Image (cartoon, rainbow, N blue to C red):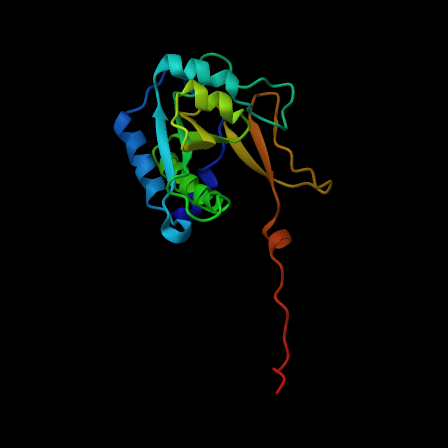
Length: 202
């Protein structure tokens, strides 16, 4: 069911690094991203699949991993991603405001991550990086802007959802066993009641 799949599609930051991907799976995931809606139907997002070990090694230190875990430097060797998918904006195709591409990006990456979770693969959207350094490392043409880096792999951690406590703290955290806890607001907290409007004026 879609409800269970959405619940399982959590951000994972520690992976079974030595467990490789079937290259066909990564192409299938990009295909799911491709099929999502697009503002003005511009379809200006493009994707780069990275699995080669040396490229992954050089890309890793350019990424920041968990803002709410300041004492955690990110996954250690052996727990790093087996693959990355870079989400790129092709500025030659983006005719409207570039802000529209952010809507496309959310749709596309959720499609991709839902499809990944269905196959037992999980990921982390990483927006904290220096775009120029990533651009240079990967020798991208000038027309491409790096919008997001998706780290992917088979999980080496457990992620559980918690209800946000009375203190309202939404920061995720690790417990003593390394389980990753993610607070979520209750459904009742995010539903805003619609007004009861009277008869329209004549």
